[in-house]
Image (tube, rainbow, N blue to C red):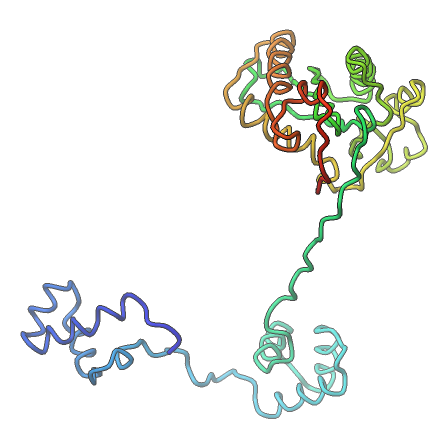
Length: 315
């Protein structure tokens, strides 16, 4: 017996009560059937193990594999250890084996011909992230879809464009009613000007592989430069793409979107693009003045005005 369940712990006291008094009285007190108590009373030898439930699994089945079939499977597997299930089944069928492949898999698993557990997934080891040395060295850009529950007009679609400086965590947000390479290019021009007014020269923008930024994953369009890429080249900004389907490489902007969902979108409602833009601007001002642990408990605004260094970041 592998373990003693809570139900098993109550059985000895029930049986002892039935022995001391009577089965009918024990049945009423413990809300158990009298036939069940009689059965336990007959099995009880003073130990809790004697009251354990026995397996009801049948010892045999009229359609179970015969000894000859099992021997044929073992011999075939021993001679061909690298064959797949269906190829093995095909060879056995050619020699008179008439079972379904699922039945073959089950019996092979029971005989230990397959590993019992799934292979342990190799743990990802985080590498030290490239440390930014000054503001504007690299800015992460991404788009967040505004939840439908926040929009009063069902026909209106709203999107939040986000840029975050990796060095200072200073964010710039943009409100748009469409997600396209045109909106992305417009946001790029605005973020360059916004950071420039704060004496930050943006050298590189990092995005995912969405069609609003690049045609890298678009079949038949990979060689076509998007308006966003053209604008970045025109302004002398390097455009860096992260590995496909790896959002953690854009981790800072992704994390900021989770915080936006929790602290902003969960309690706001927007009635137009102008209303959304006004509320988003106020939210941007607030988030840029919140102390952050990676910035030594300074806000992005305070961190830019100070000379406090920070350490290696991990993603």
